[in-house]
Length: 289
Length: 279
Image 1 (cartoon, rainbow over the protein chains, first blue to last red):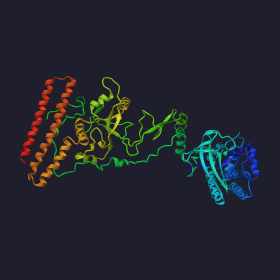
Image 2: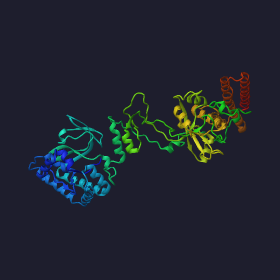
Image 3: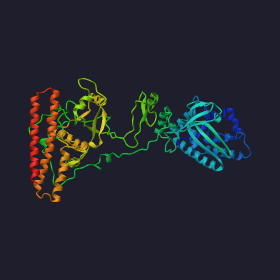
Image 4: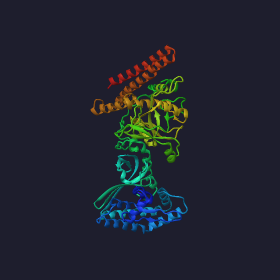
């Protein structure tokens, strides 16, 4: 699986829901779990675990939805209490202090530089929380992709893992997302409700350096993704046939003159300097036999 | 000896060469035509610090007319040149003409131990030993089974850049290489004749047709000499006549050489006949 970051901020969430006030109303209405503010001088990123968007498929919650939404909020709150999140927040506060503005890329870069292990740990805790949510009936299937095109039919998104290009309805995000943006395509089940959402995220190759992380793409994968962006074909898969170099140089299958008890050798002088492969100018003159 | 003390002035049959592009290329079941795409200069600069578009090749897609990229197998090696001198000169351009799009034939040269080289001297059709000598301390094997071709234009460029020729074989080794190449490619020539006649010697003795081991060996050697003499007649005599015509040499000199070669051939044939009739 390609990397998912495991979290987003209020900026990405605002793009999905339309604007900040609406996000706040959804939080107040218990549709979205509250995010965790990482307050520092002049900056206030709000961190949400990636599963927080699941609540959006129940924008007008029914009584059947409410226990599931409480479960969602409880899972998010538990993650804000972890030591790994606390360490990440401390790093972010220090890094963002007095800074003019920030984006998700900036936060990720800071975390990878100064708290990579904590980020990995927290991502694993998010994954564990998602497993528990799935048991409660809240399931997410998240794919990383890139918006290739936008039309009336929807967003054309190239998925990193499968290489498929899918079409996602334009209302999967309330704000128009630009071509070229990296997103997660979230298929969400909340009880009986289902929905599809597009959430802005970082490019997968940003996560390639994350330590000990089996779900992050490696450098080559990120590199190939960039290169294959020019190609609008699906590659033909070629079954590899491997050669072992030592075998190729060996003598197996050779036509060999066996060592015989009696050997027959012609008089070399009879064919000396009779080489039709060479020009006389590059050979010494024929010698007397 | 194996090598000339210095490189031959012109690229020649039996020269050992090296270049970044010398691979013993061959196709297997996974061979596919490939299309070429380009990573942008911006991307290439970021990734590899190369400030230009960088091509990359993908099997089976984006194939354009006039392109001939193919996915193949191969190992980077030094290689011995197996094309004949006449073809080499033509391919690289005669009389000041530029190189052509013809191809030159190479066989990879691999490092070997002294024992491996000594073992091959006896008789392997596809592997030719290049023992170390006073001019080169490395034992090598030319693997005729893994021939590959190279565009003469790139050989020409590599020659001009320098360092392409590594060693030149001496005349005797080139004679043997030509005979071994003929044995491998055509199953003809003195090397193959010796093999066939050794088998025939054993057959004569095993069947009891001949009891005298010495006589049968003498007859077999005489028969092998006929093939060797025919090889000499064709090379020194007939090929020599053609070369003399090209060079505008004295015709009488050529006739004398042909007579000499035919007499040699007749003498060896007569000796073989005598030996056979005694069996």
